[in-house]
Image (tube, rainbow, N blue to C red):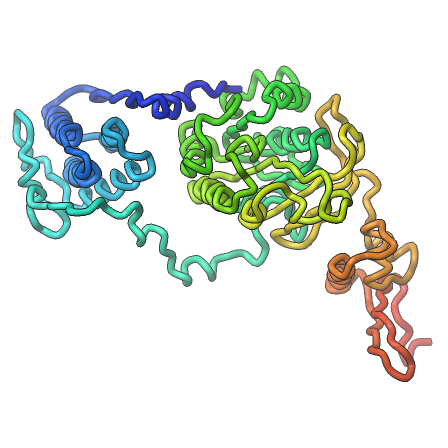
Length: 481
């Protein structure tokens, strides 16, 4: 495991007003490298000298010119990008506008490379003479307004190259077929009151993403590359839970594939929505665990905060990061009953609206057996399930699951209402629960595991609900003997 100090340093320096370190030339300084470095140094000095109100425009012009130098093979792109970002932050620009400006300027400048044969042998280059994409000298470029925060065309996709390639079922990080609890490119939120095993379950998903376990709760987990676990809510307790999930040999062989962020975040995510993506980039992580949401942003009941937090989540996802969030529930819902719906998840509705999947654990703190409800699904509903936690070993297993096909085989007949009564353990299932049971029975029928007797609406003979039977007891038809 790797500690969080290094990848949080830049953010802490920024909050304290300290500029990020400026990199020097990399590798041997031959004529071409000397030319590129001299060009970069000159543009960095122009940005430092720019007056307030012109700094972002000056940074864009610098990135545009340096992009042509990079494209001509005179300067390493990473060195150029890092240096330009650093100087932009040092003169007081925000991280979001700096990254957007540098990215756009470099990209546009690279369209008109400075070719080697045009390179002066010594001294700083005359960058004003370098061409830019529209054919005018770079020195004549005047930026009267800051460039857009993002080149809008970057986010456009042609429907024929994207929509038509979408698979019929969402590809899963955790799940298979119709039972998907965590889809690729969508956040999974685990919500529960304290003491119900959120972190215990998260630790097992971390094991799956690290390739140590193939299944969690009998569903496959897709292996990733590196996990950044932000231990923000009682980090010592999180650490103890994670230690129970791994043995000593596993920890020693993990190397830097599991990176731990320790304590409160370096900034409020609702005020710095780029934070998640940047922390993952600095840790080179393709999986982010947020433990917990309430510690990442303040005033979560505020819709503006909830919407901005969702933006932070989506920016991380857009950057190729799979997001797992641990969150809390209200203690009692508006009716004074235990939490059972998305409205019972603490905070703004935008928190759950932006998640692809929401799984809720209910019970009493410390219970070894808790109930899992899949309140928001990327595919078909999973559960409800009873889960048995073995906290000493950091393991969770499905406990006394109601198998609808087994129920149908044992009883010989089920309606949607009778099935919902058993599945949801209630004498009066809600309409939504009945509809979920109906869909599950219809899915068995589509798979050839059940057959149905159509119901009839009310009338002289009265109404009757559709009834399902197992295929092991097929219907009697004319001609059978």
